[in-house]
Structure formats: C-alpha cells, structure tokens
Amino acid sequence: MLKKITTAASVIALCALTACGSGSGGTGTGNGSSGGDTITMGFAQVGAESGWRTANTKSIQDEAKAAGIDLKF
Image (cartoon, rainbow, N blue to C red; front, top):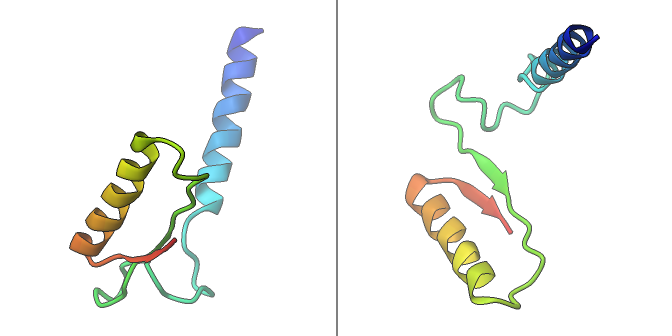
C-alpha cells in the first residue's frame, strides 16, 4: 500500500513540475532562452515586526540587485 501511495505521489509531483516548464507561448522573460532576458522575481514579506524579517528583506533586495534580477516587492 505504501509503495502505491509513493508511486502516485511521485507521478503527481512529476506532472506538476512538468507543467511549470516554460512553453512557447509565454512572454519570454526569465526563461533564459535568448541570453538577454531579465529575470523578474516576486517577493512578499508579511511585515517588519522582527529584526530577522527586516534582515531577510534587505538580503533579498541586495542579492537580487547584485544578480541583475528585476525584483517586484
């Protein structure tokens, strides 16, 4: 029974990952196919109620800028 559940979960995960691939009808941003595309990344933060969240936000912003990523915050 456990083997059937594991197999079914693996198939579902594989299908989900396959669906996430970029197809030929997309906008073309961030797929790396032409080498000159800019990656756009979204980032949402719940709030700045702790030092960790503030540091995490700053780290994400700094690293995105260093990597040339268009960050939507």
